[in-house]
Length: 189
Image 1 (cartoon, rainbow, N blue to C red):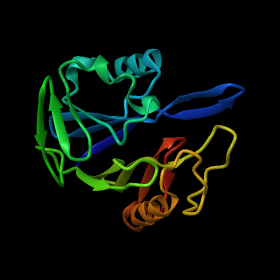
Image 2: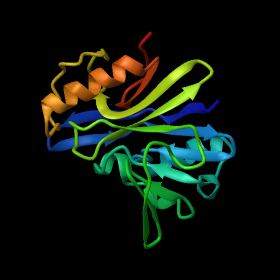
Image 3: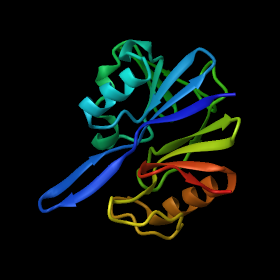
Image 4: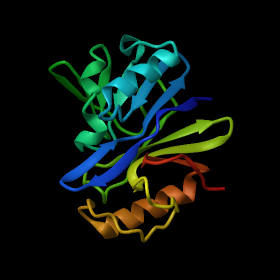
């Protein structure tokens, strides 16, 4: 069974001329494979949390990106030895390889969850406590909002609200726990 740990809880704060935001950054260990999902935008926080886990960026095998918004991907370059994955492609230096269904060499499933962004995907991780879905921005809240699993919650950044609602329903149907793009992990069941 895989292990899941939140390295850094994501945050989003609306300010006068924009946002202060970094995604939830998740460490997944499946056997000897180490994956960081959505490395976020806060370099100092990410490095300190890796050090707390006695890890260096060079220890990470894969970086998984739920989607391409900068608050989720800005620190991906810290992991020079890691292969970068999105929902369908593995990127290694100048090479691209397609894959589908699972992250290679692991039991971690990749699920297409469009709506917030067309390319959005989530990870489904089987752990001893149940299924954890690393949901990216299918679910996210500002620091001042109450976290609820409301399928109809408006997302000002979504490019297709109807697809987002469908993706949220799909996630809620399978997840025991949800790790959102910004906010605390929530128990579903």
